[in-house]
Amino acid sequence: MSEVSTLITDRFTLRPMRREDAAALFPTLSDEAQCLYLSRPAFAFEEELWGWLADPTWNGRTWIAEDGEGRVAGRFVAVPAHEDGIEEVGYITCKERQGEGAARECTAAMVRHLFDTGTRKIIAEVDMRNTPSIRLLERLGFTREALFREHETTHAGLCDVAVYALLSKPMHTPPPPAA
Image 1: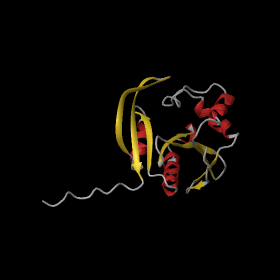
Image 2: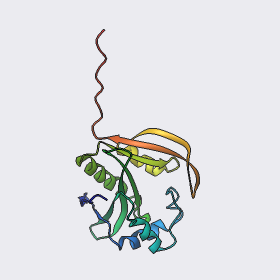
Image 3: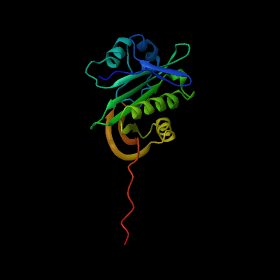
Image 4: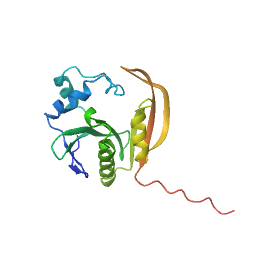
């Protein structure tokens, strides 16, 4: 697992995860409505959530966003994808912090950090019913590259999944040769 650098935004500090973060995330991740677009159902117990968050076999990085008063606003992750230089990102905002722009601000900081540290492409897979997540990605400049119909079966049933992506520096396509 790669080291997690502390990132600073105007309103939040994104820092490495700590054990006590499970308690702050549990009200959101134990709520069925909040977990509708996760690949697994809501957590029944805080210990179960901590086991998932701290899984030693997971190869991603987790940032916890907290405000100036130390209140957790969400979890933001980056996971190596199928090839070096490509990272997949994910995020969940605590339910009491939704609608405040925390996801946009913190995801933007994570994207900048990933590009600044050598990532060339960032992807996000999103359930097509998750309109707020799609809007967030599009506001951040991500483009839908693929739509996989009836692609994944989760606790919520069969899902259509879109892949959104953002390039660090779009490749320049040379003009066609002169005739």
